Length: 301
Image (cartoon, rainbow, N blue to C red):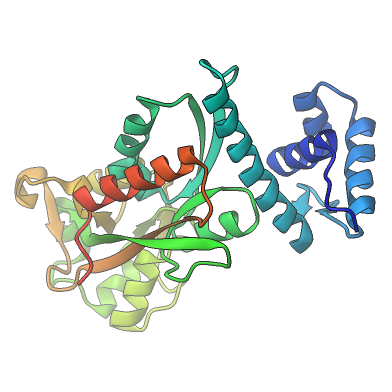
């Protein structure tokens, strides 16, 4: 099996993985869909294994994930090499990061700002639940991720970032209506929860652990976006876990909020995963990510 990958075939595979279809990949590459198909098939033939599942959207096979990981790492290394050999880089480096919405909404953006001060980089941030971002790094869709997974996959490093603490909050009027005797199993079965998405397990894990309630045993709204999610709580749609950094330092009662479980905060430990062999750009980004996280998150015990 030849390990030399044709650049046009590599670009075709990356475009299919990024867009989810051969047609959209063709639009991105300014060629026909037939040309994209031929290039991907030629790459599969040269490597001796299928790389793409022809589903809707298209998904990489296990072998395809490994090839994508390799191609993205090579692209970063090549872009960094070009920047060291030229006084001005012709085009910016593209970097894809997977992270959870609460990190994006609180501490992550300052890390990008500090990196952009000295680099020409275009970021694509893929927002996913913190328990699922690791799969995007694993699949080759991202070159770094913020996740709850402590163990790195082969060829990667996992760096502890700190702990994000969550409080179970409700609007004061909502608490009076739904929890007149406080949070208990009976009231928790009736009061609506606000979850970020169907993959958000913060609220469901708490209710299962404290009251033995399974998902579906209580009503639930789904409101995506860290700030929109918190706004839904403040406007009385339901109660939910809210990250402490978002709450601020003002007393809850002055914000019209109530902590329904003050003795039971939820702590989520976050990790930064990136490749062991990094380009200078990724190494710089990794440093800034760790620094930004540790300024805001609680240190690990």
